Length: 116
Image 1 (cartoon, rainbow, N blue to C red):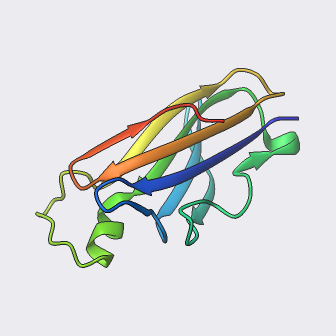
Image 2: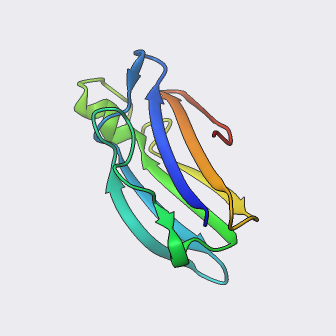
């Protein structure tokens, strides 16, 4: 069976994005919160966000609390921050595959891709 993972890289500082709160939602007729985790010292979550019978085809969102991460580093951000929560909406089509959704951040930009 497939599974879902993520990690965060702080491209502005060349560091893993450690201690970032990540929320996972399933999106259907309503947005349902499935899990809340924090990234570890390597910017990764300690276990797959979805796996086994919970890993189903559908539309999901990962929400990363980027502003809190940069403020905890001591960076002065405007209020509101340009990037507060970064929300990535993506689809899982094949329940047998590994879906890896990384996030590269800076205080004023982000990018993502389907990783391996």
